[in-house]
Length: 509
Image (tube, rainbow, N blue to C red):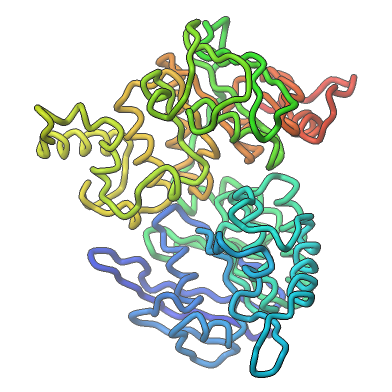
């Protein structure tokens, strides 16, 4: 019998007012991928942070190669051969790609001068990027890269440690389909080389594809396990949430009146391309494409973050000039951004302050904030969005990803949106919270709100869109009505083809 390279026995971890893990056990053997699944708040990230030396268990044992060990710090984890790819990015924006990959481990020369060997650090960094299929220069500053590329840099950093035990917490949450496939292939190659891998992902199709075994957590406890031949989407969902989730197709849209009309829009990222499209009242329009296709740039223009180089924008048949987010908000246009922690929330303040931040005038009288009314209304909004928290005074940084997303939605929904732009709406969110967000999107659409949904999750695009616009290098390469939507059709347009094959496409139903 193969001895586990890593084993957790009856692990319990408590935080003030919360039992994050209760009597949890788990093991992973050399050359095995164990997927850990569960809803946000189930304890998955806490478990990995203990293995990575960020937290220590209150009770229980961690065994490495059969020996009880105490992992007191990140350095201890590295010494035991444990590498960690975090869900939240830990890259330093002011350093270049190579500097991030080898931070604290830079190759040096010059004896006591300890000068960084620039040739070696960039050559070695390029090798790890090449393994991930990422063709970017190693001397570019990380802050200039899209979020998906920053995530790949973090993954390259973890690979550079040559770890024996690799912890992967939502590693594909910002990646496109092609980048995800490449990462999954690298993960399987590492397993074949004998690396032990604990893999966390809310994308259950990935889990089904690569996991040798599945362990489910629910409310901080072991909820069950599945062997390789038992892994199905339905079984995983039932272990995670304790029930089956109903799935309904989005309703068809008739001849809805346009809410948003964009004509000949040009962005700074792609000044030579003009795009035109519309979004009807009550319509969910999916925007698909590879990372860097220009989807987020369009969203930023519509929300007034960036100024367009040309073109016209009309809201309810009236021309508008969106010079700032404040102007966009006054027009009823709201953005749920790709990076919720960086640009969607102020994580250091409370839920209440975040929910009411964009509408303080509603909670003020003669320039003074009516605190009791603000607290009461933010509490109502959070209950409506099913935000799981102890109170609205809880700091946003302590919430799970799904609940942080709901706080952003609570903020905007109090302002009666006309157009709501979702940029990667369920990135890093569990299957239960996803279902709630999809349900909300459909309710909003049914009430007449126009919805733009930018997503790199193919299942999400195919399952929630009533129409799909596919972008390629700043241009709209194709528009697909629901009956023609398929993974093949979307990928053909996303990779630059301007026409579908003559054979009839299989719709996604």
